[in-house]
Amino acid sequence: MFLSEVIGLAGPALEVATILLLLRKRLWRVYTFLFVYALWLLIGNSTILATFLYFSKVYPDFPNAYPALYWNIYWNIDSIDVVLRFVVVWEVFRQTFPKRSGLNKSLSKGLGVIAFSLLAFACGTFLIYQNYTGPRSIHLALDRSFGVVQAFMILGTLVTARYYGVRCGRNVRGIALAFGGWVSISTATNAMADLASPFLPYWYYLRPLSFVVMIAVWIWALWVYEPNPPIMESEPVELGQWTEDWNRTISATRTIIRP
Amino acid sequence: MDRGLESDNLSYTDHHKAMINLIFFTILGLALFGSFIFIALQGSPKSLPDSSAVQAVTEIINLEGSSFANARRLLDDTDYQALCSNPDLRRLAQRLRNDRRQLALTWISSLQNDLIRLWRFRRFLIQRGVASSMSEELRTLQALSLVLLSFIRLSIRAAGPFALPRATRQAGQLVDSMSTGAALVLGRIPAAGWAEIERSWVKSAA
Image (cartoon, rainbow over all chains, first blue to last red; front, side, top):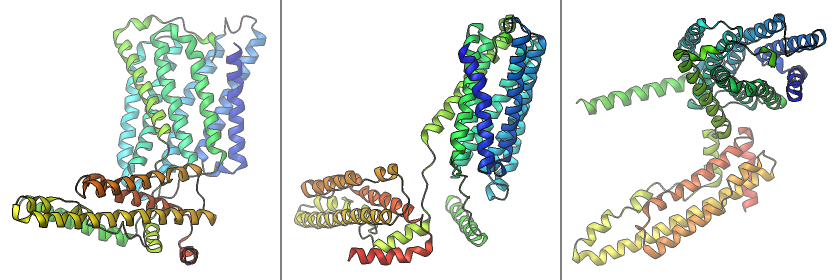
């Protein structure tokens, strides 16, 4: 019980620290979407904490016997959070492939199609769980269906960046890895909790603990302002020359293969 | 997370489809988590120096050994084998082998000098206040490369130029990687300051 209380308090405390860090160093202007998400986390988790404290006083049997209102608040906030997590994914993507970069122009359409397919996959896997009647199961299904997609999106962004030699600064790298790690471990533990009830006691600690670790890594990542280095792009003249050379190589190769 | 949220409806795990789905998500989630850990442990990709910085380093230091481009030809024993196959040309083959050995030794010696010069240049840049981390410094410690070059030199002297052709050819890469390291450090100074660096370097080397 003591550990869960520590985790419950550490979450909002670290969220306050993240917001202060973003405000103090004026990083909120650069990482606006992350700032919005951090604000949401603080509001959501503080509401849950306040509700918990309130019911602890009002209901003597709480949390062994809990009112429906409490878990309604809890799971509804969690469901909103599942959707809002996409702003972190978008933040990582827009920082890694800035709007004006050539890579963004080349990749955005293809990656958009992949993102749409992943969303369709998430909706599909969630709808399979229609046969679930318990409120927790529906929320857990929602959480893992979208969580796995968000983890794929973050991983895809990092792998694509690495493939094209785009370097990530400490800020984006820390945000992306911590967020990706958290949503993927949350997906796995959610599924395990539904799969085998003996895992539930571990799940009660693992999920919030991994969340606290994520926020701590965010603070570490944002402690020093180190954005992504600008993507070095060639001049249009150079690119034109390169394209010409490349086309010449292709036609020469074709001539050799099919004389 | 609170214990009070535990649901009383857990019997659905009997459903075969749902079980497969849950196992799938468990494996997928763990695999994704492993991937993130793997990326985190790999560290950020190594930064490559600007090509102009690499060019500037080559110009400032005048690398003699690494500019030699015909190492493959020098260490190729085809001509030697062809001469050996004819008993009348054995003496000529021996002379070719000795000449090649001398050339290979001269080349390796030049590479050693290049390596030492690059190491000194890097040290010179850091002395002048160019930023570098301790891990970068440890990575570019050249003691091992120098030992490796000495070993190759010894093998050429003892067993001839054709004994370890692959290892000998790769000796040039040791200098290339050191040159890249020096260019990376030089790239941290604005290009406008490179001429001043070159002047100071020539003065200090004299």
